[in-house]
Length: 249
Image (tube, rainbow, N blue to C red):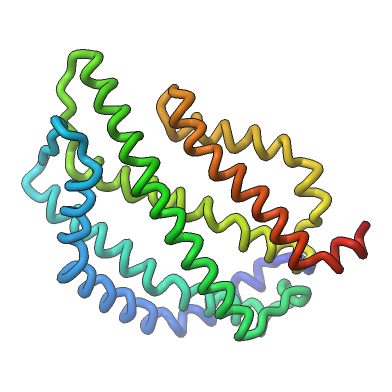
């Protein structure tokens, strides 16, 4: 793979600059639609489903709720335009640099990657929302009770924390498609993934400990799907790219 130079970066930025107006317009439209129709129901849904019984949400400033709504709708707007932005970056890299010469994605493959990616992200969000986070928030609330303090959360910190955790789970569940893509395009060898399997497991548990309280159950609930999806990813990669892997063996 060719080195990525400063001239390559400048070429990409120049090309994207011509598309910036269109990108900003699309983000603004998605932002306005999200602000008007989605942000309030989404915030209310998270409050109803995730706030433990007995806990309370508070405002620390008069504009906190309005600013939260703006941030949520802006993030949704950016997320809606992200696939188009990724496409522009890929096309620019492909047409104006040689950094992606060894990577070829047909339109059909891009559609399949996109659909599988959306499905896996949705699966990760569903796991976090329906299984992991309710238990996690209940544990945090019980910890506050055991310490004799009232569980009062600011609405912005509470909603932002839930959204961040859901994004983390959604990204983790992208592992099968990412590994399949990397091995299929020769960026990472299958043997490298299997060789460092134990190291990767340790990394999953370290990550689980970093984003959860010091409780074995919640750490396992974070690390376990990572390990499971890593093994599923290895299996899927071996099946899909078996000829390439055998040729390297």
